[in-house]
Image 1: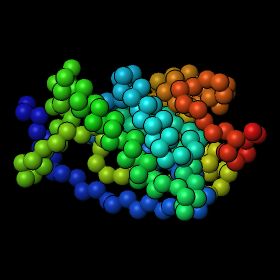
Image 2 (image 1 turned 120 degrees about the vertical axis):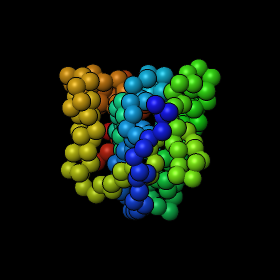
Image 3 (image 1 turned 45 degrees about the horizontal axis):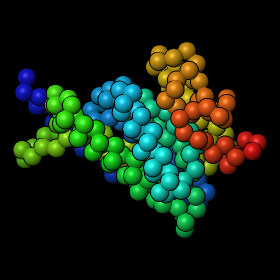
Image 4 (image 1 turned 60 degrees about the vertical axis):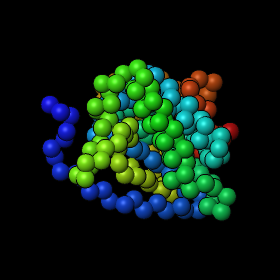
Length: 198
């Protein structure tokens, strides 16, 4: 095998993001060709660092997150549109540095991984990708129920995939932080989530 994918290139719909007033945002995106690149604790740790850096730069509130082997879930509150960074800028700050870091690491430490990241175009050009093309999934959440349903859904992902028995057992999510606010890899802005006592 030469690593070339004979299937025709997929066409991706352009994602329309709605920067709504006071809306929480549920975001998720996948690894290139849904490969389990995020099985690596090294890469998962780099994702956590990228989220923290994006949060420091853009000032969004973090309400929930979960890193799965093939994809990511993130729930944020960007703030009011007149003062908040666009979600596309927030995602770029998370996704681009992480992809660059992994590609540089693979070139130095694991060149065979580059074959799995190679994205060949019909015109013969090629690049390396960590994340799947396209904008991923972006949903505006308007009600308390929708917000809490999404938080529970995000935290249940590892259980549904058989990675753990209970959400709080998965270290690569915010589930444990909802049980004990002193634990977890990233601070959650509990005091701003509707229906939570500060």
